[in-house]
Image 1: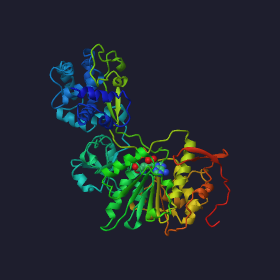
Image 2: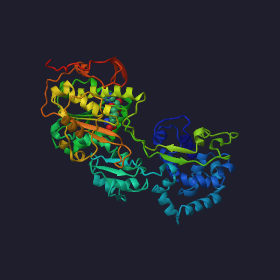
Image 3: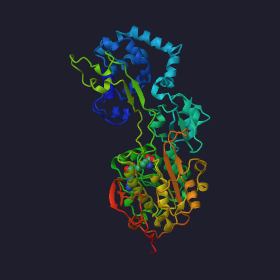
Image 4: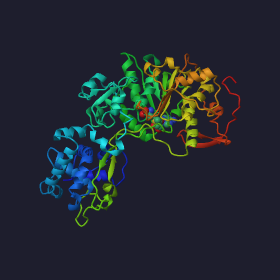
Length: 571
Ligand SMILES: C[S@@+](CC[C@H](N)C(=O)[O-])C[C@H]1O[C@@H](n2cnc3c(N)ncnc32)[C@H](O)[C@@H]1O
């Protein structure tokens, strides 16, 4: 019997393995129980832990049973009181004996708890726990959830209607996002987003990570704001190939692929070419593309630097649209609200850490429960599998912003050099002007944009769902030398789209802008050298500016002359 020891060892995580709970379970070799059994035991026990913790403490179980640690006590009590088949162990197993000895007392305390919570029957109690109603009693979650669980239906693998009648059968349609945000965090309710097609908002703790639709790639967890770039780019069959320049983990790549696939006619061909520089993230991208069945449309250019491409080469002759979502400070990222808390009973003496398993007895392999994290009062469990779109970069903010914005401008103007490209979206999950409007204004003023005929995609030209989005660009004085007149500046700011975190719109902090040109001009220079010379940096007066190499890492370079006349290809 190893289920309880194995689950306890995974929770204790004494090897400090990173990643979600699920990935930790699946990565663990030589398990005797199935990963699904372990995951289910942990998921169910954590859901009930707010009830079971006081029940176990009132029974003084940990005082009487020295073999049990707080985690083992919780897992065993869960199965004893709630699992259909009780504790999954032979009748004479040491753990089974340790828990069943206390069955009468535990059952009585559990019944008291049910009545105190106001539930007449066990079924009603179970329903309340499954809906997350008891989470409200967990102090940390008193406030209204501001961040729903966003789910994009992957239309390559089926329709929204199909998902609503299968995965979300039994879910109630909400009239507003607010209803979802105010609902218990596991309530079966959804809101159909009015801005982005095929996007649903659900309460934050709805666990769909084990649903057949998620494991089959029919639904994808993707923040609403993160859906803006592909939707704004709005690739059409006549646009030719689409590049996703900085693609991993692939949320926007698969979104692009879904849009392209929905519009393409039989006999037409249109590819999404996805670049990703990082080797490890390339593997994630490839997996995501395959799972979403986007591999018929997407060509992954793994471990490939977009900046090393030759925009005028034959290979990219057919590229008409580019989505650019480069590395950024990640300051718009919202801490997920779906980490689940496992409340552990306190060990004797009132201090959880004083509890140690009986060391006089020989311990079984996998019984790693003396790890201090086993004794923590609460474990925060990240059940989610998804790879973050961005890893926030450490360091002094002003230096990071200067380095990142230089890199972002460089990669954006590189995209503008693609001979036949006529649409670009530029996005970040940053809240900072320097990485957002600042880059847009610098790009518009660059010789590459001016010579290439690039301009901002005006608000009235945007797809309906984004034209109507109210949060637009902001201006910050003295941050960027801008040569646009007031009306052009106003027009550009109105064209920029912002999302703010912690609002009742339920998005992370995000920024996106589109660029278009009506006629492609094939003579755009291909070297980045002259353009880099025009880059004046943001207005800091330290006599030197930080630039970023292709990794977004800051490197010193001499300050360029701010007043230098703009050089053009014709100069
Ligand atoms: C913000 S993330 C992209 C998230 C992705 N668009 C999504 O929605 O899932 C930026 C990615 O760009 C990659 N990257 C940065 N510079 C790059 C370059 N020069 N060429 C290709 N990929 C690059 C990073 O490794 C990172 O995976």
